[in-house]
Image 1: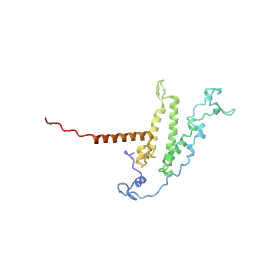
Image 2: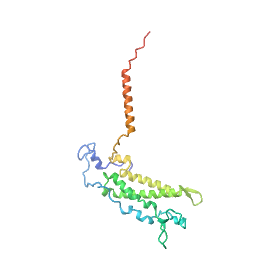
Image 3: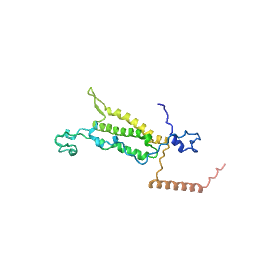
Image 4: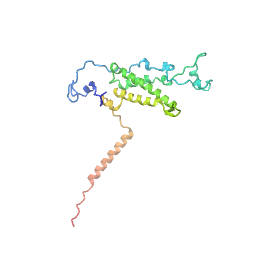
Length: 232
């Protein structure tokens, strides 16, 4: 894979070009073969990102509270976990129930609907949302087990989820960059963050600084020049 910063997309070069069909340096741009439409509103998430209805099928599902307390009477979640009479309890994954992937899908398309296209960017957004779900599962495993586990020889070793999480975070950062969801790559794609209005505190500090500058200028104008030292 070649190094360096990826080239700016043709549509962004055209947006800041000197004239039609030219970039900002006056160079001719390739002719448009296919023009892809940007997203219209926020598209519905794919079915595989909606995980709340598959929470009992998750391989990361935690142990049912009824397994720890046979009676289940003292557990606040007992009613949710208690199965129908004669059936074994099915553990439910809290992360899957939260629909993290579907939520991320809606947020990404809401933020990037002006430059993302369903025809071109759909699959990479799906991969990014799946990665967010996997990241949440790995962090949950670390929160539950801690960063160290017992190794084969009885000593403590790093939890396998630690290295998996670090590798996944690198990949997530790359996918976010390709889609324009970080500052440097957003600038490469021509995405500019608008300046927010000044807060009351910032306005007060600005007025004080301006007043100090005016007083300083008046004092300098009013100051009399020093007389040259006498040669005697």
